[in-house]
Length: 459
Image (cartoon, rainbow, N blue to C red; front, side, top):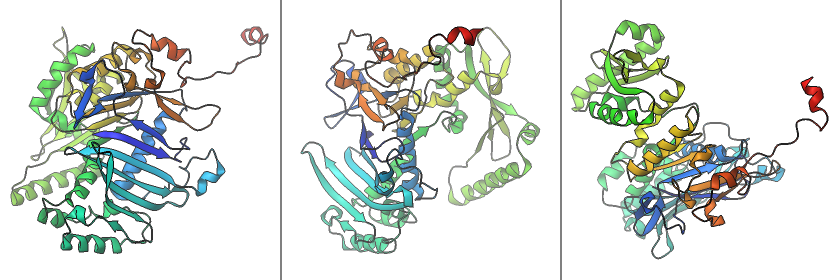
């Protein structure tokens, strides 16, 4: 679970700004909350703001920091510091997460000199929320020795020696994090010490890879494998008819290999076939599950089996026996299928961040999507979105603390804050108040034409 994210000196964020999923003082709609060891967390948050207010920059900060955690600094980041002030070029940019894993809480973060593509510091703490204290796991600065809490690792000499050796090899490297190094070819360390706290280094890294999912406007959820399960298809069919798309059924049907050949460049198709065949050979040797290849091309969803049989997704409409290709559906319907996995009741914990949830969606569909997530989706998942859809600004749907604003005045820095600070009554028409500018986060228009020039423009 995500508890909090903080960042500073990144794009339009100058001073530190924080998105918190900790519930506020609101007492209504407690079914929207996840109770984690007496810490109540929100399942959902919606971030509003004018165009260029910086709300998408929050997700870019999370995506950038996630990429650094997983693979180190690979791209050129030199222009990503907050360029509103020239002095920020020589200031550190900071990223910090507070997260929950296996009923425990952790704070992990790092500082980067973005103008130099250089990581300068890194830290990891376990948080005791009941006692309001931090327990150091490790902290380090570039070119300095790492500080490790020996007691946290049970004073295990072998583990401590290995941690110091691993760190000594990267002490002066400023493009990669210690957490990243501890997840490169270290399987034996974690396999040989399953009960030692050292495993948290693997668990936190895997949280970023597997649990934190960021979806930008032109990219859907990579859920093609989701459609290969008959059980999942049954769940989709129960849900999809409730969204007013006219679709009554989703099916996986056979497709011809020739159709796939026509859709995919020969070299890419050849590489896919080689991958599938190699997976089949390896699965026989290792007694593992045989994989399939999934591809979305020309607005179609294809599944390629190990025997090179091909399947694709087709749809049926209400009161119509015809079958329709996925590519024939509207952008809004395809977008819904891109995101529908989020609405499933699954056991695995996910934190979904969707930039511009309402893109291609009818306002009522956006409302129903959020309503469905809050009422029926997995209690171990969270959904955080940016949106312009004011219909969600409704206390019949959301709590005060689930509504956030990104505000930026006169091209200054972005300020991030919650509606909770306004302490609005629960009978307040907050959509109207927001559009009137009461909470900030709305565009300010200059007059397009001086008074008296309108008639000339229309003539």
